[in-house]
Amino acid sequence: MSGGLYRSANAHGGGQPPDDGATFISAEPLNQPGVEATAPPQEVVAETSAAANSAVMAIGSLVSRGTGFVRNLMIGAALGNAVGDVYTTAQFLPNQVYEFLLGGVLTSVLIPVLVRRRKIDPDRGEAYAQRLLTLAVLTLAAAALLAVVSAPVLTAIYAAGKDAAYKGLVNDLSYLMLPMLFFTGVSALIAAVLNTRGHFAAPMWAPILNNLVVIGVLGLYIGVYGAKALQPAQMTPGRILLVGGGTLLGVAVQSAGLLPALRKVGFRWKWRFDFRELGLRELARLGAWMFCYVGVNQLGLFVVVNLLTRAAGEDSQKTQAGLFIYNGVFLLLMMAHGIIAVSIITALMPRMSAAAGEGRFRDVTADLSRGTRMVTAVLAPVAVCYAVLAGPLSVVIFRYGAFTGKDAVALSTVLLVAAAGLVPFSISQLFTFAFYALPDTKTPALVNIPVVALRVLLQIGLFLAFSTTFAAAGMMLGNAISYVAAAVISALLLRPRVGRIGLGEIMRTMGRVLVAALGAALVGLLVVRLLPGDPGHLSWLAAAVRLVIGGAVIGATYLGLAMALRIGEITEVVGMVRRRLGR
Image (cartoon, one colour):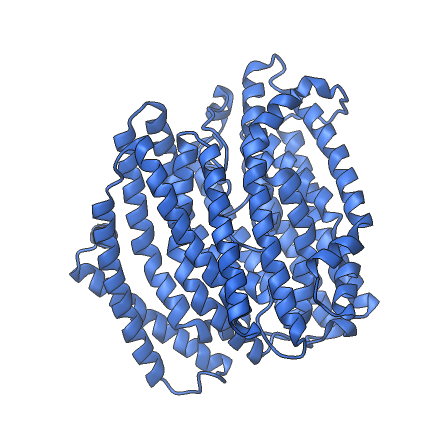
């Protein structure tokens, strides 16, 4: 249900989705889209402590997200907005194909199956994993080859409405970047094998190698060619080879970085072609609903890509927010969601899964209510900062090199609208994971159909109703409304399954949070307006001053109002901090 352009392994662990995807805690796979709570082998539990795993995953996730975000900034600094759009489209193609073919099936089916076979097979699942890797490598190689051959067709589909120069550059980059499909799939499968054997560090840290390679390549690009905003027609073969080949190299290094870990856990690669022993019918049956979920998402993303490319195609010389800016803003939202909401979901999921398995549904609803209130209270001031400080934030974080001041202004408009979707997205994800805790993969897949349909209709309507300069912001507005719909529908469907989720208490907390957030926003707007400088032409230093002062004022005002309104989720945190300081 995310609405993000792509969810590659570049900024996430092991090819697993970051935000609505897997984070592993303790020594068992956390419930992911379609993943049942499966107990790990006893020897895995003995080998790996929960505290150590949690620390590795938390640190790795933070570094991975951070380097992934720096990578995105480097794309803007090196290539600018116009060529950045082309790069995003070309990179979107292999990740789109990967998500459809393997991404959802990996997280929903293969990991629990590998865990189960490791428990019941005499060889602890060794032969089964070898067969699976053999089949996957052959399938991925064939899919990558077919994708490269079909590059002109894929370019025509995803770059519809663009001029010949844009399509030509997408096509050239696609030839270099579509083989990423193979390496991304292989690294994801190796990560699954490692996770089921109690090894969590390498799958989390390997994508950081990818990010560092691409950051280095883009730094080399700036050193050789300079940081100039170019149009697609100005990209020379040398520039294309460096950017596209460097991106492919990053994914290849990520895959290679996992091989030593395979040897460390005692797994030996061996080609096995007796695929009937895999139980392909069972895999197909288990993955059917996830294919539905992923397929519907890909349809929604296809609409976003085409609408944004058409918007930019109507006036290619005019600065406006396209694919690159849309994806940059989405990644900014996902950083806040990943650091705060995913941490809360990660803490609650084992509790909800255990309670659901034992029929303690009151405990499930209590955790669900607590999580909803906590996500709302903690993320609200972040959303206010994104909205009120969108202008200075865009300049400080994004305006470097070929990414101009006009590009930053265009990005700030998209960020302003996108801020409204941060809290609804996180709540909808929490409710989705509540279904996975039951476990139930069918309902989220069915809920996803009307949610994505609503999103697509809204996005098309907004695209037709407003100027093309509002296209990316319109996509974000459609996302936000669909997240609200997803949360409401999920809540209604959860009630018959687990009982009342404390809607009254949730709404009271949300009302207080809304008052505190509005108060913080008004004070923040007033303070920012009083600061010197033209909001439309801020220097980096002036933007940084606005960001620091405005963020401090918004945070302090929200905290003060939250304490006055007795928002429990905030007062508890403040009390805990005071107690620790007292010690």
